[in-house]
Image 1: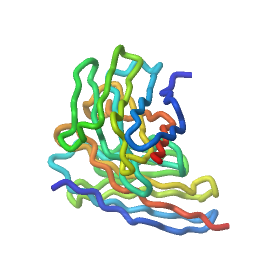
Image 2: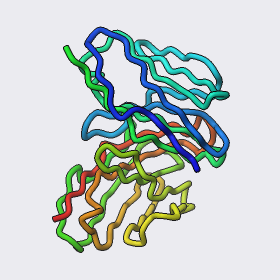
Image 3: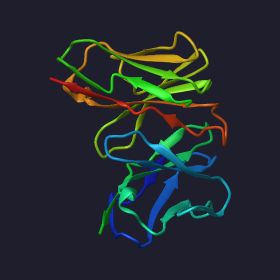
Length: 109
Length: 115
């Protein structure tokens, strides 16, 4: 079956760095997405990786290892507004998105 | 600004009373999706349209129906809502369904409460 695994909840301190991991098992692979979702709001697109390596976009970076079925989202210089759920989603061979349940990130002052 | 707009943002209905949720987009995207999301769970795809072609997920209950009268609008009809249908309903669009073109733009969601 197809599956996305990510931690349910993480806590970090304002100004620090946090890494949110995601492992995936999909039928074929056409890339991996990260979305941010604030409580009660819609998800917003953060990143898309289809090749191995790290992609940096401001304070956020996303990493992919296709051989390991593994990705992470790295958030630097954490701000209180980064408190949200972070959803990992894999794109399978039929271009269907397989979603994880999300990692709730709690930022403490 | 180009966007995806959902109405209503909050909908309260009684058990068994039909509900219609609407979604409109100004992005001119080919694909429109309806997702159901319950608290702390992954979004669950109900169905999607590629232009006028309707694609129903195998496990979407018959209680859920959809219409896309034109490129800009899509509707979700819940014919007889049950307590288990209380959720956030998310509309999303994308240009296409191929790699890289599959970035979803979501509306703000419609939160359904069933009494």
